[in-house]
Image (cartoon, rainbow, N blue to C red; front, top):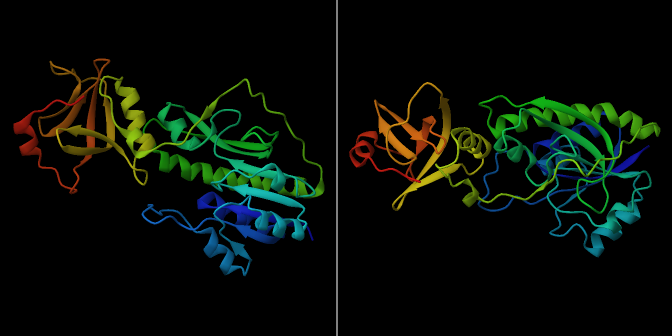
Length: 303
């Protein structure tokens, strides 16, 4: 029976590990992560799925540790798969599987290589992204493409909504490609690394809104980091406000004054640097409450 060692985490990890099991692969070992204290764990558990199927599972801090490498070498797997596993796998690990190492990436490679590709695609205003199964090589997200599936990004879709589409696309891509991988008939398409670029990880501070940017740019940022991600935010003095949902208002004129947030006619709005206006549909203060009347009295503009 064809065997695999699977490095996996998050919803994509759960769905893709389920595909391997459904298609009869023998999963010799699952390598996953221990959930970080304080992290918002809104996604499914690979470790729980492994327990459900009585699969051996480990959660090493460093997957490239000599003991981990030795354990996998002893298993002599046919394949190694990485499904949204967060750590880089080194050359020694990648050389172990007899029939190759493959990763599922959440973009249409070679576009959006690197970290948090779904969030970046939304922030950059893309209208589509997808899931790509590709060979793993020493350089991240640079190996030949096995298969990929595009999904649409609607003008008001949040990153979480797009991630749901990408997760389903990843499941379809793997289910379609796996029989060819097992049979040895898969065709690999080299990537043109001159296309696209690498993107880094994002921190909560990267969600700070710059109201001098265009209304579209701000709207994209809000969508790209909306909950369950940390959210976009602005500050008024010592007060931090999370801007969770916005809508472009193409027919509304900005009020006079600098770009920023204000309350008018019973709603929150923001004038942006390109002279266009956003309606703020969801706004949250640190304690979860925001008194529109008190805000209206202050009439403070933020940048």
